[in-house]
Length: 470
Image (cartoon, rainbow, N blue to C red):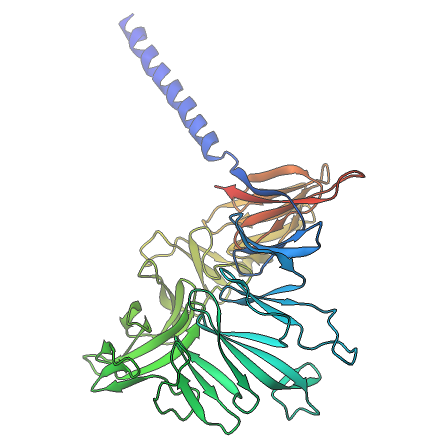
């Protein structure tokens, strides 16, 4: 009897543990939650490689700008909007006519987040120069290609250039005539302008002549004196021990590539802001490119990846290439992973790791893989697919059609073979949105989902913006 009484509690505990493990496994495999960010809206269009959306006001026929968190950033006032970068949007009024009744070539206006409309429809070209300056040109037709600006087979001269300062919004800093403007180049908060005689003037943040002599547009306000990098205009010391420097423009604004001589006589390189804040520390590598939170590094002709916010090398410098996905807001990372390439082999590294050992490796030569961001998929038949996600998980799905879109590869639009309805799958095989959608959803570059809700005879179509929480 004693033996029986001792077995039963153990058996009960084992059963409980099995049930607990089963429930934990079910919880781990539970479908992700979703949250409606916007609903009942007019047509939605994503702004590529950004957190912005164009949304149409059905009554006025005009577009507004929202972010993918649901905040309206620009009123419904845009006719044909286009994103120019650094929070600047242009709008084109194609119906404008000039005094001769011909199509007006100067039909663009400038809109800036935080400022709204800052100009009328009076420009032919609007070009941001980094995050601090913008030039807007009024054009006149030119006879041939000996001109200031060419668009397709059309030739133009710049009759007037308006220069806007974008510090904390947008303000018209100067309006330069044809004789006074030929080209411009930004140097952070400073800007160099060349006139028709190729005389270059360096202006300060208030667009006042700095008094510093420069010969070319690339001549900067910075110089080295006794290994100290100076700001010649303010006199501030930026960095000590500098043997060379180069100013670069990036989506983070203007930055400085810094060179020093190492103790062994070798060359060290680093990256800092114009104020001297280090983004990439000095090291025995070269900095090939900078995008968002990442810098691609090269050492002995092998590439690696440095994460600026984490201040760590997340991929060591030992690969032929670094995977860059131009259809996502973050071109390098997705779902907590980054990826290196050597031949047909992909090496995945976790951003939570130490960057010394890959988390997952796959040779794509072994099968006819296609890629969507960091996720690989193989079409086994027209309704059956095998996926390999960035976290190393591999799974198969049948009885569905796959519609690869944009984004980092964490979400896929799919259609059920059974009921011909659409849904959304995660990269690890879970159902993010069930097969109840009549229209194919759109995965945005930052991982949101745009869903079109078809109307009927009494109601018009509407759109939802959905966040997948997983």
